Length: 389
Image (cartoon, rainbow, N blue to C red):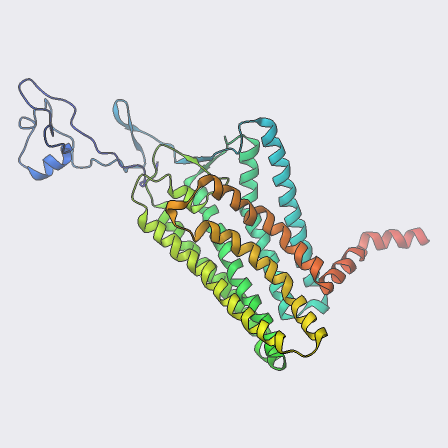
């Protein structure tokens, strides 16, 4: 176990004839008696040999408490995830469903990214941010899905070490936080396009777009690093079963055998910074957009303005709604089973639905994807050439 292994207070358990058991009557552990009475020796404590040294908390990575006291231990802390069901047939169905959702999200987001990259007509700020969002979704789903699939197919027997769990936690917060900030940037882009169309090219220059995209990644990194470091330094007890399908922060903290109020406060603050503040900025942007649309005299202009925002608004409600139910609620009302079910929305369904929403509700993206799929590869062109000969 690591230095953050579960602390264990060692009590004196031996006594001699005519002597009281050490600590009896006052309920104090042996180390406190020794600290309060540094001159005490083995006779005063009623022990037949010298009491142990002052290191009484089990924090050494190679020590653990067994039936015979402290013994060497060379393993590391290993977690495993609670299976959704103990029925193997149910687990097989879940494995197939999760695999299809993961492959669908990969294909959808990769198609969106490739379409925006290859189509010159989509080289605009709005689609540049859509490209970055698709890349974040690929990383987000890839961070969660493989380990979840391995756990499901093994009926929860797949183990993950604490460093690996911390790495998954770090990238989960990084991609998720960057995603939420980027959605706020996309809302600002729509605000400038609708409310200040004459200054759009000046405000949303490529330099500004690149800076805002990089800023969302930097903020995601700054949100993920301190919280991951705090949680990974917690002492964990013998129970290593995570009541979740990935290393979620709340589920991992519930395994700690120490006071986690500071860590819960840190999680709540970071959740406010990653979810509540961007959602507030999005709400303000759409309030100005709505006011501008209502002042438009052209029905066609109103329809076009609403259509350019509808896809983004659906994605925002899907992403922020599920995250709010998990991370912006009091820890006392947290339900592990409910948290696991709601987490499926933003870990498996949201990465799949985002490219579908943008491609189905945006005519430019739909047409560009159609042109990309109809475009012949070099092998197809060569085959057609030789067939004509």
